[in-house]
Image (tube, one colour):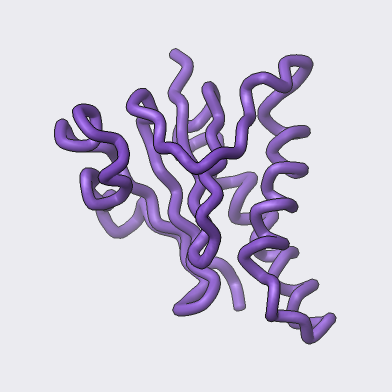
Length: 132
């Protein structure tokens, strides 16, 4: 099963799309480890003004290695939601440093431009809080 997904970063309009391996079992362990290191580095550098842009860029690089294997067409960045995604991962940067897992409802499937408004958040336990 392909399990496409989106990764969304608070404060950045870019939508990262992966056409396969997007289940929480695949994404969350990699994303959690990555975010712990990312936040440590940001705090150590004292830099915060461009965090959403930096985070999107670094996720693309990291997931390019983790998810694409030898087919880099699997990973894309754009501004349009894809109707076929099974999961959407929202990463907080400003308000908090959490990862929320969302799944599309029928409304999203019919009109993906609804974004998270057409989805439902997964139960507590599916959301991960990144270390501060």
